Amino acid sequence: MSDQPDRPARKPFLYVIVCAAGVARDVDRLFVAAQDAGWDVGVVATPQGLGFLDAAAVEARTGYPVRSAWRSPGEPRPLPDPDAIAVAPATFNTVNKWAAGISDTLALGILCEAYGLGVPTAVLPAVNSSLAAHPAYAESLRRLRGMGVLVSPHTPHTPKSGEAAPFPWEDALELLAPVLSART
Image 1 (spheres, rainbow, N blue to C red):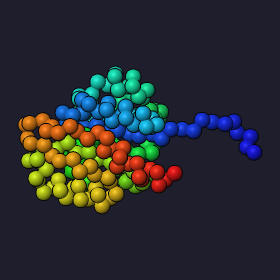
Image 2 (tube, rainbow, N blue to C red; image 1 turned 45 degrees about the vertical axis):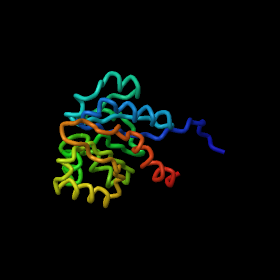
Image 3 (cartoon, rainbow, N blue to C red; image 1 turned 135 degrees about the horizontal axis):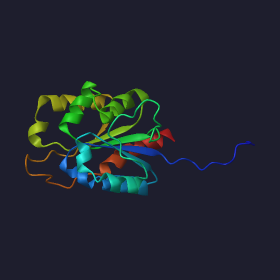
Image 4 (spheres, rainbow, N blue to C red; image 1 turned 60 degrees about the horizontal axis):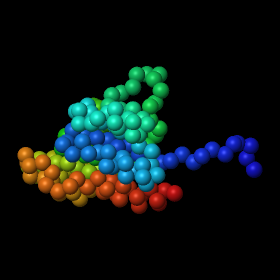
């Protein structure tokens, strides 16, 4: 028998990394679904993605500050370590930089480091068909899959049309479910 007091089990923690795509305004669909599934959620936005969010509303819903910039040395960590990461929506720029190992923003730094830490990661690209046709994009997705990143099969939309079909927010939790259940 332990002398330690009983502590409530910590909920698994999901980082939702948000990039600058039009559908980002609806990212609450993902973190509400994650919370309903028993996750705690923290949101990290790319610098440009931050402009697509109502940060105050996100912070009120999650109970954590929206992160976008590096913290200063000695400053406390505002989010627990992630048990999983969902990058949604992921832009052409983020997918290519991440696959190339470029860590010039907090969001990319977290993603690059997650590979070395073995954190399960799902990506839901929000890329138009013209950008998706670029050979670097296909190579980047191939590299991310080779790194174990779970990639949504969502189809790119037509340029300048917006999203032709609803964005598949639910794919993030569905992609991560088998990986996370295998860990428990």
